[in-house]
Amino acid sequence: MPMKYDIKELSLEEKIGQMIIVGLNTDFAVDHLEEIITKYKVGGVLLYKKNYKNYEEMIDLINRIKLLNKKNKIPIFIAIDQEGGRVNRMPSEFKNLPAAHKLAVKSKTEDFVKLSGEITGKMLNTLGINMDFAPVLDIKRFKDNHAIGDRAYSEDIKEVAKYGIEYMKALQEHNVISVAKHFPGHGATKEDSHFRLPKIDYEIEKLENEDMQPFKEAMKNKVDGILIGHLEVKKITGKVPTSISKRFITKYIRKKYRYNGLVMTDDMRMKGIRLRYGKNRAIKKAFLACNDIIIFKYDNDIRVIEQIIKLAKENKLQMKRIHKSVARILKVKEQYKLDNAPIEKNVKFIEDINQKIEDIRNKVL
Picture 1 (cartoon, helix red, strand yellow):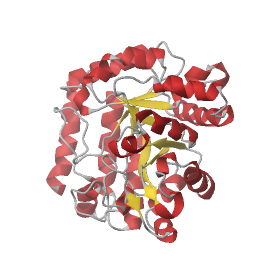
Picture 2 (cartoon, rainbow, N blue to C red):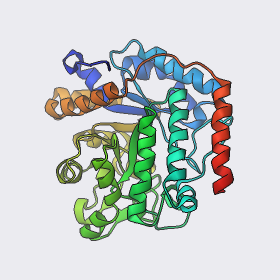
Picture 3 (cartoon, rainbow, N blue to C red):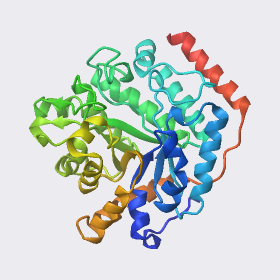
């Protein structure tokens, strides 16, 4: 039986902490893991390839995270962006799976995509990683080296949904939480949200009937989470990015698509949104916009969490909506039976995974 968590047993500080995933984007951030986990009691951490030089260091880091979190009441999300292709966060001992578009083009069926999801799910689960920001459900409209490019499965809307859902299910079957990205569709713009705020000038009907469709299908198929991109949709949000628009999140995800899974932001310290709003103001706006989980890189400190707690104490952040978000988070952690058990090192596992990856590479590349 999965563990049951009682939201009533959590303090305000613990509830706010559950709504945060901190990106460990530098060695400096890793040096402050104890503060991040035991003082601020964050709900999750996001790993980067720069956090470890090899497999052994990766396992040591994951076990350190789990050990520190034993002092907390709730198990922790250990998240990663693992797609394959140019978005690969695995240490050098692991071979890399081909990008989504290559898998889909060569396969013409779901076979390679499903197998890729199964390999990724098994790999992440064995490593102790319980959340993957995948699949990419954006539509491919530009060259392979575009911000999305070959990370997208197809130019065809139905194929994006079909392949993405197969990949999502494969992750879930291996007990890895699947978070689809970047709603409402980063494929609709040439710009890269890492550096500036992309604008989508489509008519609403076009955006709804094309870019949003794969996400709608994923929600119907019970994807665990939806990651909101930092995208200006001129006809809906004006100059406000979708990630901090309460109106947009409520209108589309909660009401139109009746989705009750996790809604989370893309990294709130990406350059585009940070330059416009400031690194801390952007995070506050993300909380006020009714996201369940706010993701942001460590960036020297995370004392902004204390400012969020202050907003709640001043009733500027409603407890009712905090409770809704935390309840969703706890439900997912219960469903996937997250725990703080250490991960054993297993070199044979790497050999087995690499053989499966090589088999796909030989057929696709």
